Image (cartoon, rainbow over all chains, first blue to last red; front, side, top):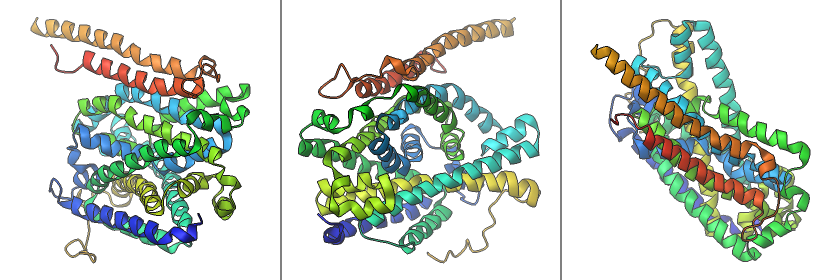
Length: 381
Length: 77
């Protein structure tokens, strides 16, 4: 099946789902209505998200296009090493269980919105807070770029080239994020999860059926890729440990944690979020399914692999295994799975800039309200 | 006097939760010591040991955090 033959129905489903989440994003501003000009309302959803919303929000926040494209791509290319994402997510939650409820309590008491706020209060140093804020923003930029890459790959797999569609997608994202703040990704995350669970469950059932079962899939993987080489073991463990300790220092993770309504919401979520880790493991296996399906040897996908490298493995697998309309559905799940974290990351970066750079250094004593001159009549409403 | 009693109680419950919290180190040991699981055999339904072992730890990790959560729940007498 060539990409050219399936644009129409795949594209229709894709655009429909994309339009749906756009509407959800704008409607979100009316959800739990409050004064969105207050930064803690816009940027933390008023710190009122309960256990279930936090689960969706953090799930959408932490499991990004990186999960759906880059992890299976690494497994496809490098084999067992790509699985470090699994121990990584296993050990991050016990760590979060101990550390984050305390951070939440202190932040709640003093009205902190960012990690840099906490550092400012704890060490009474604006410079240190600035360093934390700048580091956070710099670390978030490539992460947002990674989401762009994810969207670009699925658009490319549907035969859409060029930067314009990507720019349109991000203008829409910026518009509803601006309008609704953290409420938008929180609400979209629910839709996103429904689509993603359907896609992944379909993939891990349908594809192995076509390929003759999991045993056959693992048999198709070169034996040296199946387990770690002796010199890879330390890299594997330290990659997992380092990533696990770093994950919740990212501004967007912090935003997700601080928007929850209480300490026990965070604690409960550390036991519930591993459901996503299970999904992540299944998604990682898609890399091996792509090997077993031989997508890299198919002429139809030659151009895709040449352009996107191993990142094309999962789109190619979906194209080869699913009917066109479901390809559109699956690709929409990846694109929307990229939009949710991109929105939260942008909000987290905005919080850092407003609180720890703008009000601290550029306009000392600026009012805590957002200054939005065109707020009264946004051009898109 | 009342405060002392309160402090003592708090100290005891802090000690108890520290005990429970040490359980949270178990997943670190289970997943970060790679020689435990870096092999193909025994397979489970065709899936090499390396993979099903780590999948299993997702469940064990979640079970441990859930256990610690219920054991140290705040507001419990």
